[in-house]
Image (cartoon, rainbow, N blue to C red; front, side):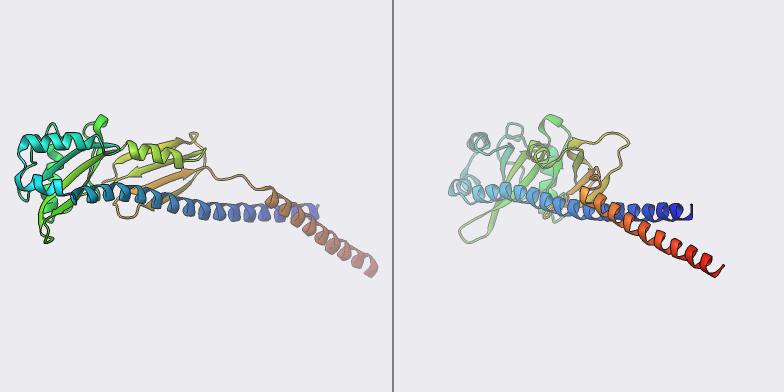
Length: 259
């Protein structure tokens, strides 16, 4: 009876150790996966920023800042926004001046203009700013300086991009039995993908997305105990049982011999 109890206690302890070891490995793997996912999302944002930077360096953009009228600038903006993937709005600004052209037709919201003026004044804004007022046009904003041939800033190019970019990318990065969310610096939900059954135990991980104030949140179901771990548990339990049988048997033999 004593042997059985000792074996059960030892097996329970080994099972707990195996379980904790498996969870630690799963947490480490989840952290590495989410770091890679966060870097991918950051690179995606950098891709759109690079498009905006290149557009701001075009000679045509400089000329519009210098001599373009409202109608010409609006027409250019509406034509160009169709050429930028996932773009919602596009506009040019002169320093300290409202948007050039028709703000409504160029889909520059008052909140976007407010952020631009705050940025120009050196005040804090989101990195990048995000606007969720209209779910159908939910977007993030990117800007690039427009400079003259001497490198002096003569204006700002503004572009906004649909959050559908995040939805599609996050869905492709999310595994089964996993939920991933992106939140901005204010804690607002920007995107979500995946599902996890209610009540399921889960591993949780938070990973900052580089070059933004966004965070990637993840909840993932812990993996089952691997066959190799089960085999180790069985072998260890058998060894412990054998040792205990020998120890207890030897103790009983000594008692009988001494009696």
